[in-house]
Image 1 (cartoon, rainbow, N blue to C red):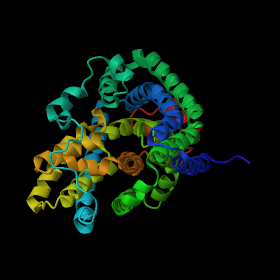
Image 2 (tube, rainbow, N blue to C red):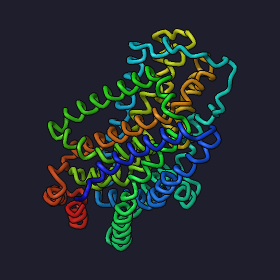
Image 3 (spheres, one colour):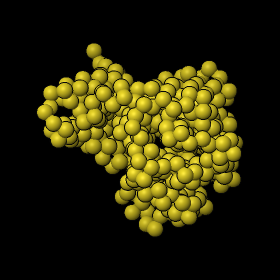
Image 4 (cartoon, rainbow, N blue to C red):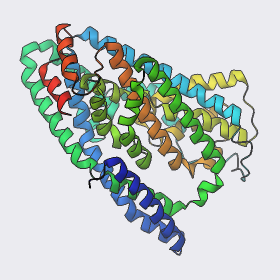
Length: 438
C-alpha cells in the first residue's frame, strides 16, 4: 500500500518528536545533545539545500514564461496592481489582527518568568532594516549573484525586465521562451524527486529542535504559545473567509490542496522549502501557471500574513511583560511603522526578530525582551510559515479569479486557456498542456 506524502510527513514529524524526546532524556549533557542534534539536522539541511538548488531557476523561468504568455504589458500592470493591492490589505489586516488579539488576551501580563535586564542585548542588528536599504536591495548588482544567494525579490525584478524585453521582440523571442519553458519543466520534474525526501527532512528538523531544547520549554511558554497558535488559527479562518467571498465553497478545496505545502512549511519552518510544491498545487487547483508564478515570488516578500501578525503580537507581548502601556495612538503608529519596515524582511536573516527589535526601539521598550521569545521562536516560526503559505495560496487564487482565468480543476485549464487566447492575453497551447499535465 502506497502512503500519500501527507501521511509520510506526519509520520516523520511524530517519529522526530519521539526520537528527540528520547535523546534529550538520555544524553548526559547539553553539549552531547547539541552534537547529536547536529547529525539529525543533516537531513533537513540537505533537503533545504536541494530546494535552494532549484528555487532560482524555477522562479526565473516560470515568472518569465508567465509574463510573456500574458503578452500585454498593460495586463501585466493590471495583475501587478491587483496583487500588490491584495498584499497591502492582507498585511494591514494581519498586523491589526495581531494587535487586537494581544490587547484582548494580554499574553505578557501573566508570564511568570524573570525578565531580562533592560540593557541586555539580543545580538540582532536592528539597523539592518531601513527604507533606503530595502529600495537599493530591490535591484541586483548581478543576476548571477542574486541567483547564487537565492535573493527572490531581486530575481523577480530582473525577470520582470527580461520578460518585458522578450515581449517586445515578438516572434524573435519564441526560441528563448520555448527554451525557458523546457527548463521549467525539467525543474518541476526535479522538484518531484526532491519532495520525495521531505519526510526525512521533517524528521531531522523536528528531532534536532526537540533534542536540544526538549519539550519542557513548551511547558514553560505554554500559555504564550497556545495563545499565539490560537491566534494563527483565527487568522486562518479569516483568510478562508476572505477566499470564500471570492471563490465560494471552492476555498475548502484550495485548503485541501495546500495541506502538503503547509505541513512541509510547518515542520521545516522554511518558506523556500515549499515554493515548488505550492506552485504545483496551485496549478492543480486551477490557478494558471502564469498567475501563480507571478504572484508567489512577490508574495514571498510582500505577503507574509503569519509573520505580520507575529510582529504586533510579540511586540505587545514584550511591552506587557515589562509593564509598559502603549496608547491607542502609539499602537496605530506601531502598525504604520511595521507596514513599512516589514516589506524589507526578505533580505534580512531572522527577519521577524529584526523587525521587532527595530520596532521596540521606537517606543522605548527594552530590546532585551526579545530574549524572552528567542528560545521558542523556532516553534513559533513553524506556525508563521504555514500561515504564510496559506495566505499566498489564497492571494494567487483571488488574483486568478479577478482575472477570470481560474479553472475548476487542472484539466479545465485547457478550456480557460482557449478562452483567454481569444481575448488576446497571450495564453498559448503550451501552457494549456502544462496545466493539464500537472
